[in-house]
Amino acid sequence: MRIISISDTHNKHQDLEIPDGNILIHCGDISEGGTKPEIVDFLQWFSKLPHKHKILIAGNHDFHLEKYSTNLDDIIPDNIHYLSDSGITLENFRIWGSPFTPGNGNWAFNLERGRSIRKKWNLIPQNTDILITHTPPYGILDESKTYKNIGCEELLKKIVDIKPKLHFFGHVHDDFGKKSIGPTLFVNNAVMDSKNRLINGVSVVDV
Image (cartoon, rainbow, N blue to C red; front, side, top):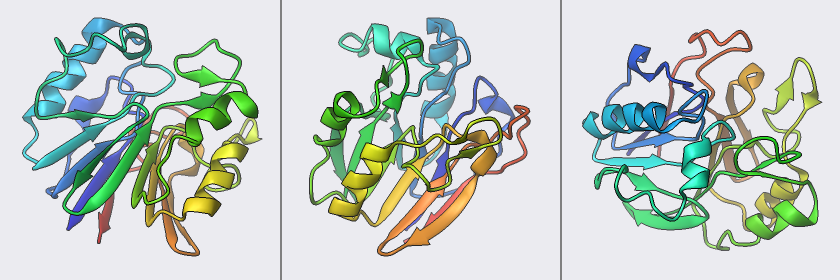
């Protein structure tokens, strides 16, 4: 099975060339300003892609998805699996998605480090095969040129505990790539570099 994964497209999704695959994952920041027109434009594009399964989580720029989190059925097409602290089983893989990032609350889906965000990670089932988050775990593909390691410490603790096979994320444009640690393959899918140029590419994982 081939998994295609992207993140942090920030309204430039139309400029991407998406390869074929069985599952297509977007790890958040589909928009720049988080407005409804931006979100709808992305969703229409995403829903028309030919992949059998399409999974989406939100990111810290996607304000509309946070503000109207309980009333999104009118804009999210039926062929998109939108995960927000929720899971789904596809192709015998147990998949969980969460949009939250550590922060001071000025962005969408922001929670303070420590106890506040830990509550979200505690929702992740123990038997999760594929984890999708917007934030990286602390110390793994999370180095920003400005702030160094900005991933989530509490998320790292949870991953050490549950040991998923795959962890897809984005958020940090400067640290695109893949890294295997123990039983888990970590994939930072941010398609843009730190100057918001679409040069990082699209991630492909065969499982």
